[in-house]
Length: 78
Image 1: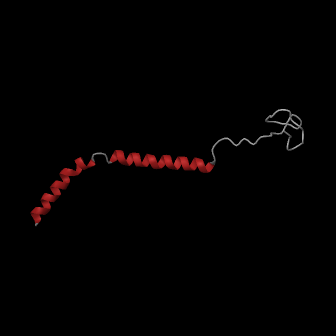
Image 2 (image 1 turned 90 degrees about the vertical axis):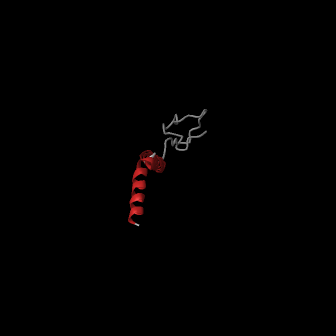
Image 3 (image 1 turned 45 degrees about the vertical axis):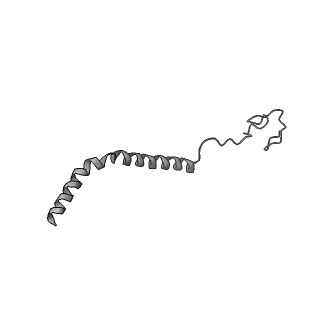
């Protein structure tokens, strides 16, 4: 392998050139900004959905007396 900056021949693969000291490999580890926004967007959407489901769990039982009461009043008016 040769250094792409100074042309020094390398015996084994290293991260830095022994002659000029420059970094030989481009390690792009991590996550991009777009990927980060995507992950946070998905987390927010899932959180909103879970909150909605928790808040509306068994609400039919809670509002059923009011619905029945309203239907009885409507039948009295007719």
